[in-house]
Amino acid sequence: MTDLEPVAVLGTGALGSVVARALAAAGHPTTAWNRTPARLADLVAAEPAIRAAGTPAEAATAATVVVLAVADDDAAHHLLDVLGGTIAGRTVVNLVSTTPESTRVLAARVGSGYLDGAAMSGTRLVGDPAALFLYGGDPGTFAAVEPVLRALGTAQHVGADPGAASLWDTALLAVILGALAGFHHGAALVGAPVARFAEVVLGHLPFVADVLGQHAGQIDAGRYPADDGSVAVFVGAVEQLAAASVARGVATDVPDALLAVLQRAVAAGHGDAGLGSVAEVLR
Image (cartoon, rainbow, N blue to C red):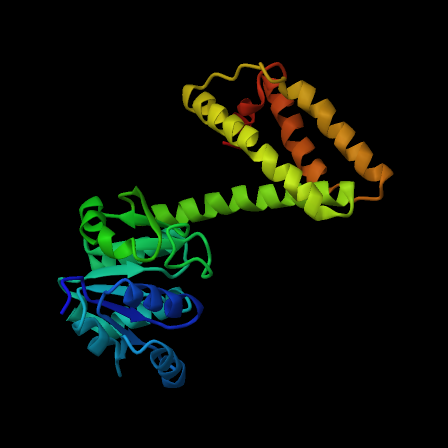
């Protein structure tokens, strides 16, 4: 017997299957349902600790925590229609990617026992502490089920608003894609071997992380010292980046986008301020 919370996973696609595996591996009695019985059968055959349910309600009845891992927002709403009162008194954790506005609608249907989650590390790391999951919703609900959520990875509560996790997910996507766009542009400039360029970039990341922390403090305080160069100075630097790109036949989409934002900052009167002042323009 186990004292760990019993969990139901509704949807065993790419994300749901690894979520169910991670929960079962952590010792939680895990029941799973999928609308395609063959896919569910394959999962249970590979992980005998996972019990198959014939209906969503059967799975939910066996659990105190119900995880939604279906394809989209419409499928999540359909599941709630099917479950009806079965979810009463249970915590519903929605891992379906959706907008903050849409998840608030789902939350209103479920009530205070709703948490919205965002899997920030894809499916590959689920079950490892290196996997990051963000959650929005009632803080008390999060605290009550955090031990369950830790089976999936690091669990971060980012706000009482049920839409907070979706918003943070989108914001982190901007950071990740921005960093990758810069890396790809730099790699195109340097050329092969890109692995050597990546090695140097990774060694430089602690400095970048320090700058990020400094800018966060500046934005919160509304003060932007130009100790590391003014916006006007960075305009010149990005113009040089664009010129170097043209000379080497590399597309200038990335520096052009950066330059447009910096020039807007100059036009808004931030030319002599530090780079952090760009946040004022983007707001």
